[in-house]
Length: 188
Image (cartoon, rainbow, N blue to C red; front, side, top):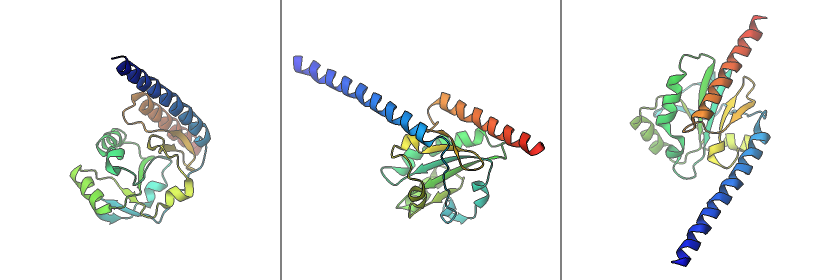
C-alpha cells in the first residue's frame, strides 16, 4: 500500500513538473514568435473537399489566422475541424479576416474524405513537401502552431484558441483592433 502512494506522488509531482516545464517553454516561444514575420508559400495545392481550387486571395487579407498541422499523429484530430468551423462561422461577417489551414499530410485522400464527412468546406492548403515548415521552423508543440497574423504576416498572437475561451476572446479583440486600425489608417 505504501508503494502505491509513492507511485501516485511521483506521478503528481511529475505532472506538475511537466506543466511548469511546458509553461516555461510556451512563454519563451510566445516571446520569441511575437512580431516575427511568417512566410506563406503560394505554391501549395489548395483544396475544398477533394477539389483543387485557387485561393490566393485569402493569403492577402488584412488579418489572418494561420493554423499549421504536420503529419505526426492524427492530423484531422489535431485540427479539430468542427470547432474551427464554429469559430469561422462566428466571424464570417468580417471581410478583412481569413482562416488559413496549412496541412502537411501524407495521405491527402483520407484527409479529404474526413473533410467531406465533417462538411468542412473551407480551403485547406495541402503542403506535401512541408514547405511552410521549412520556411518558418514552427514550434514543435502543436498547441503553439496557430497564429494571428497582421497584414504583413507578423505574428500578433500565438496559441490555439480552441477549447480556451479566454484565448479566443483575446483573438477576437486583436482582430477588431487590427481591422479598425487598418481602416482608420486608410481614411487618413
